[in-house]
Image 1 (spheres, rainbow, N blue to C red):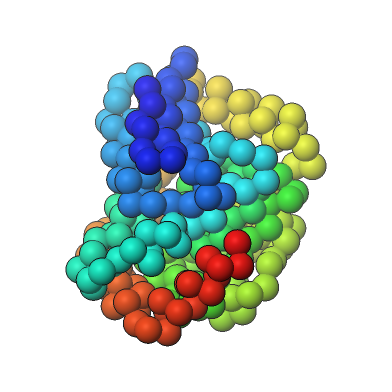
Image 2 (cartoon, rainbow, N blue to C red):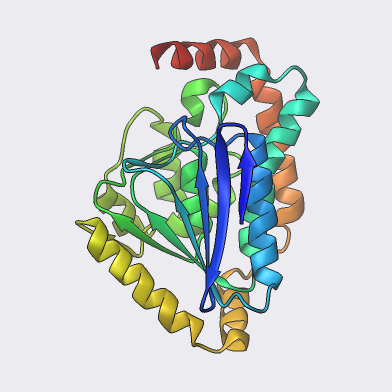
Length: 257
């Protein structure tokens, strides 16, 4: 099934217990609100569907896994309420991934920016290509990684998260990301990456659903308050992105493209 959105899509396919959720947007796999909504919905559905034993999250394209929030949509926001609603889209996706009782494998084939790192941190097992460099660029546009912060900090620790968030213009290479725990595996070509993903997904599709659900609950212990926490963080981002500083910074970024 494909959920078409303007200039993009979220595609879902289930085969032998493995559900693949793929997203695409022509602007470097950016995430507008409608794609965020579709991702949250499909992750929730897959988590409750008996035919799904394990989930693979991936994106289309060759060089960029996800470039984070859609700048076009950020510039189009007219009120703080609209902005908060937009950032709640990220909160809803992360919480859907957190609550999903099925393991989520991330296929990280390229660069991750901002919210793309949030998605990567929220999967249960990320398998990446060695060209999957990362950057938390939020501060450069006058906001911060508030909504995705809890997921990223949980995965790589406060020190590494702080370094990424503060040095917002610097790319960290995939080896750095693996050493910090963002990636579970790193491969030098797509064939090897996909072979590893298929191997793990197939193994998990034949594993005990009850045991995996209990393991996932164990791994995410201490996050039950995230429904409220991420809403609070979305309010911070929503307020900041409406500032003149942020609007001007985002405009400059879009002019460079």
